Each structure stands twice: as structure tokens, then as C-alpha cells.
Length: 79
Image (cartoon, rainbow, N blue to C red; front, top):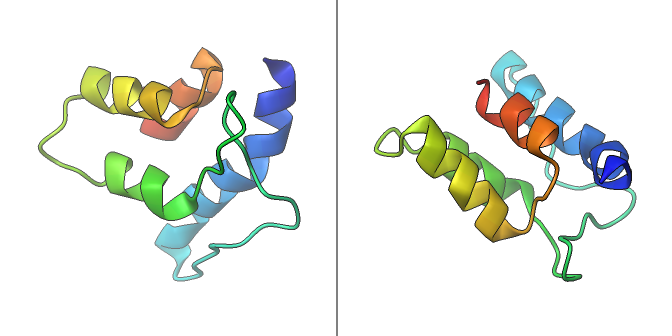
């Protein structure tokens, strides 16, 4: 699970960094879910930016996307 956190660190930085006006959507290495499917920043942002979802619904949506590290999920949704 720690390997996912290290791989997704650029993802967290990109999500947090977008509030500064800089938008990053590509990474040196493709980030993949636990089943090998690619995870795209746009998919994560759509979940985090969806005001209709509760924090738990956002967490579940990120799990459904393929993220497994609960600490990383908590960092992304801010809770």
C-alpha cells in the first residue's frame, strides 16, 4: 500500500496545486490502480469537485476508481 502512496504523491500535489492556477494533468509514469487500470487526474478531480457527494461517498468513489491506501484517500478528500 505504501507503494501506491509514493506513486500517487504527484497526484496529490496536482490536485492541491490546481488552486494556484497551475494545472497538471500528465505524469512521468502512468499511475495505475490496484488492478492495473490507469488513474487519470480528471477522474479524481471530478470526484473531489462533486459537491453532491458526501465525504464518505467521495472516499468510496476513489476506492471504486482503484485507490487502496486509506491515508492517501483521506489526504485527497481532505478529511
